[in-house]
Image (cartoon, rainbow, N blue to C red; front, side, top):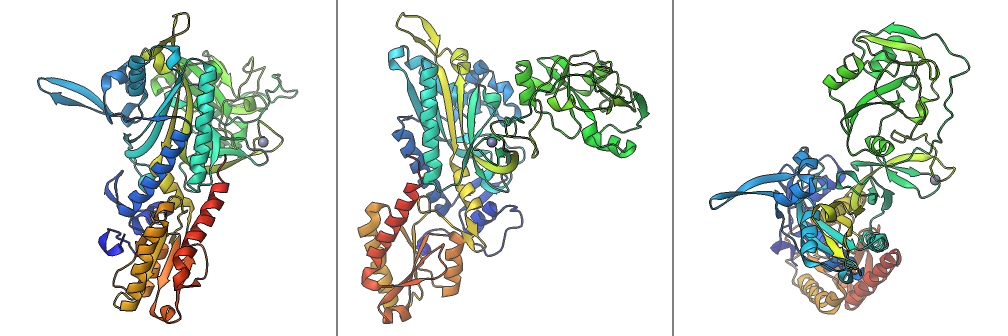
Length: 586
Ligand SMILES: [Zn+2]
């Protein structure tokens, strides 16, 4: 491809609305342009990277035995009513009626395709003999982002690879999951990403086991917890604190319980400022609705409650913070003044609450707190649970190490779904005895655009992007320094043609910067777009019979005799591809 014939609108200035490096660089390097908030056009260079990621994903899916199909983005809402997800998704689901003659059809734009694929399999597969099967597609997905940001990292429309496995039993599900987990590791390694699989909650999608694949990045939207000594890693929803269950007993020495006037101090911070205590001495009392019953959840004042853990501790379906009306009904006080003393609803306490001696907590009375509150005397508990977000100081749940927090970009997610969808949509199979059972499902997603954005976010320097060979829009950038010099252009054209003819079959592709522009201008653009290998053809070099070869990651260019240049390009790229391939798990 010739630069003059394609569309690569590079920008010198950093766009003022772009907050993070990947967004800035993808705009500046001419990969994307915004159409509206949360919607982008991929320009030719950006789309080539997307297509290369797709090809790697497709290759690994087929390698692990998944079968490609293609489902519609526009799906009947009826299926979503059957699964119940039409309510679970809320505003994130884009849904609307369309007119078909004299009737209206309610449709959704699919954010994932569990319903459609389960309905398909339910109709087409009847016998255990046809299982297991895993299908996948690469499709545009829709999810209404109320606050789209960070360029293509978080948009309402995105390319995703989604796969679904169907099997007869847990053994088949576990096998499909392991295969997919392994394929994911190969995909992200081949894309050149530094990534980490982390244990995850299954969230609204249901199921009982899942992993997210995270690329560590300062600007990542997700927080992850990992051990500083073993490979334990989990997202913050899932992360265990590694705290053992403490003995529940009243402290040996206790202060007297006192009532403290705390006008308008309804937050931990306000109370601490007013009465001069530390947040870790306070019992934060949160009123939740758990399957529609009020429950008071107690955590230490400096800790954050974790709804997923509350749900697990009570084996509940739904957990949400109670509204002010319920709080007043349960505690007799406005929000901000709840406490465990004298509360009639069930108490659920975190392990770390048990150890607080002479605690400060709400008095279940407006503008009032209690001090000197102690377990055993003022309130009682039968047991305690891990109910909070892990923090930096927590021990690792798997070894003697301690936990650290980091941020990451989620690029993939694998779930064991179980029978949630197969039951709701009647995906049943007949076993050897002609008995019917729901199929066991798994679902597996990869964010194609996220891989490109995560690469831009984590692989760049002050001059621009640094692509790995595997997903670079082009592997070689050929720069004739002066296009008016006939000798220079003749040499450049011949290198351009020979790369295509001799190296095209090994996947080497080349972009020639044939613009009439100063060398310094072309070099700046070259660094910005970050194509891995640069070949510079200039009049001076040609007089010595050489051209210059420079890798994006090297400091200096090397001089290569003109007749050897294409063979050298082929050898050096093959050697680097081999090194990249060695890092990919088998
Ligand atoms: Zn550990």
